[in-house]
Length: 119
Image (cartoon, rainbow, N blue to C red; front, side, top):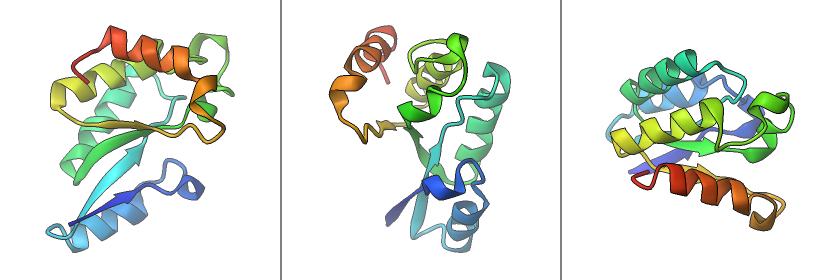
């Protein structure tokens, strides 16, 4: 099979990848892009919905957190942490895209790992 990673240019509209997965479920699985602007309850519900549609992984893009205000600035706090923990409960891998280098996000990633080592 093939893993289709949600393209950044589609942001949080997962319909294109969902259609591909549902058209060929034996061939394709998806990796969704987490939306850090969502409140925790909705983000967890959205995660569950997309898993049922054939998504088997989650991608965190730390640069999307930078524009969400002080309370939601880090992946390892608030909704990001809760989604990360839920992925661990569901045995869903989380990929983190550090386009400008891991050193910029190292502490935040370590914080995630320490708060949810099962993920």
